[in-house]
Amino acid sequence: MSALVKSSIARKWIMALSGLFLVVFLTQHFVINITSVIAPDTFNEWSHFMGYNPLVQFLAQPILIGGLIVHFVMGIALEIKNNKARPVKYSKYSGNANSTWVSRNMIITGLVVLAFLGLHMYDFWVHEMTVKYIDVQPEDPTRYLHELKEKFVSPVRVGIYVVSFVLLAMHLWHGFNSSFQSMGAKAVNKGEGLKKATYAWSVLIPAGFIFIALYHHFTH
Amino acid sequence: MKLTLKIWRQAGPEAKGKMVTYPLDGVDGDMSFLEMMDILNEELVNKGEEPVEFDHDCREGICGSCNMMINGQPHGPQKLTTTCQLHMRKFNDGDTITIEPWRAAAFPVIKDLIVDRSSFDRIQQAGAYVSVNTSGNTQDANSIPIEKAKADEAFHSATCIGCGACVAACKNASAMLFTSAKVSQYALLPQGEIEATDRVQNMVRQMDIEGFGNCTNTGACMIECPKGIKLENIARMNSEYLKANI
Ligand code: SF4
Ligand code: FES
Image (cartoon, rainbow over the protein chains, first blue to last red):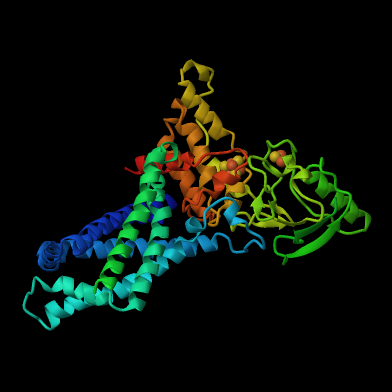
């Protein structure tokens, strides 16, 4: 088993599967968030469900955090290993002639997204934990929309949010399509359909998140 | 035309190398890149200096030994072309050309532009073969009918000349394109089926032992490969590997 995890191809599979898992999570997250714009009551209802349902809290959430940790720990480990594979660098390297900047710099976009996640966890998750388990406030199923809007008042915060999602879009642009190649889906190279779908998704979902942030910022 | 060449010079495997600048005059557009290097070396020899060591053999794009990183691209700027097949008309009078060896931990420099690619040989030895009974009852390979499309694909994968440009181009110095081409050429044929499981496992293991980096699907390898070996081979190797492990 450990030999398998050390294998370069097994690691490809791990990156691809954990990445796809995060893609699914992001989609679900978006679906909930967009209700804050189109159906505020539904947003409160769903947020409350997500915050208090034991299956979500004690099963889904740990799995999500686990998947996230696997993805970034493996990503960083691979970056270190790959740097070692070329100890002497080229004095001239024309990367743009054969590949996109985004595909070569997943570590940069990834680390920015990771830093953003730190802030995001502090903003929402730490807050939730405090409300629920430290201050032990009574359940209030209507507090979510109002709390969300509060977070988007500061232009600095909204700015950080927007930049992070642009970088997330870049990360997904390469990563989402790439995961199918890693899992041996030859179709990705032949049929352009799947590739285009992953590109569209990579732009639309982050753009949607940005829209939601700006919407709340300007309608506060 | 007149050129300025910046070339990596390194006296031996352990020596510290450096980039050295050489002006070169009288280069003709119809010369190949290696002929241009020959002229430089002739000048150096006449001056009593060490010529620049570089690998070459066939000079017709089939042996895969004329490896040079030219202006940051393996085998230079022209697609589907080895250095020996690259002509100086691709460059302009007054150009500065940077020439370096392949850079990878698994391709240590022997001297100047020559690297040791025996790691590729070891990957091939780990599984890029089919065992045939040669006791006298050997079957003719053509007695097994093979779909034309499959045969063509296998043949295309087999055109990899083992030059290492894929590794040189890859930001991770990954050897997946090479290894996957060698895995694919057998995986696509019925003759390769018997040893399929061991082949992919052993070749991937050897590839990892040699210290090549991990593929992150940038696709640089396919663009720089002088034989146009396709990324599909890597996808195929990934699925072959999964099949072999479950
Ligand atoms: S896959 Fe292409 S670039 Fe890599 S060794 Fe084979 S011929 Fe050279
Ligand atoms: S010298 Fe043989 S391929 Fe260039």
